[in-house]
Image (cartoon, rainbow, N blue to C red):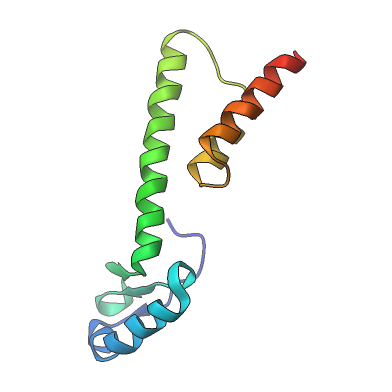
Length: 112
């Protein structure tokens, strides 16, 4: 479920404005507002800049890696700390690099 208000456009409008939309995507890049469309104002598909799509795919790849790692940790009977989970989420969102995540983890355990 979406936590923000969507403006759902009819397909005919999206078709008519496609060139304009692509030009806006070129100008604004990944930060451009996506175009949600469908019939009878029901969201069915989204147009978004390719750069935003790439970011999404990378997030999904990282999120899957985290889910697998957490599953492995829990299979060993361990529970990751809230700090470790928060740090991993920052990595999944691309806010920190793998090196940053590793160094922050080392600092955390050196304090213990």
